Length: 163
Image 1 (cartoon, rainbow, N blue to C red):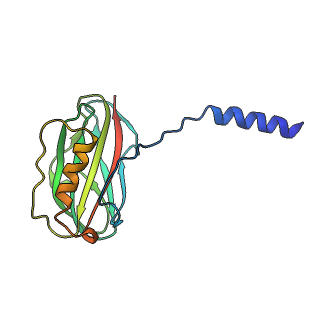
Image 2: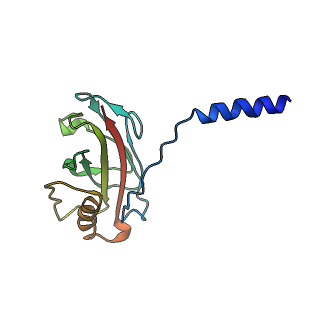
């Protein structure tokens, strides 16, 4: 009888849990495992109100160059930082030397942040324009990273919600 009560309480507790599953983002080029973590300061899937400051921590296994891209819920994209040199370990953006803050702006909804990493200094520029769906977003990243050897590049993504 006691075990039935415990099982009943456990099932009620678990039924109240919310499970968030990240969609398969279809990232290509992330097999080198050079980026070990990408995390907004409120955690992946964190909530931000328009105007609030956002900080992103990127952890890499080796020194290299980071480009941070944001994809807004309406499909527009922008670069937060381009070709920033980082040491191995964790770097939090924006860095003091960047002289900027990342303040969350409209539109409301899901915002994806993608980190492109290369061990060698980038020789090409990533030009963003127009509206992106998942496929076009991936193609833009792949086109940029394809200029670098697979062992010298990585891409990871995180997300947050703008309320």
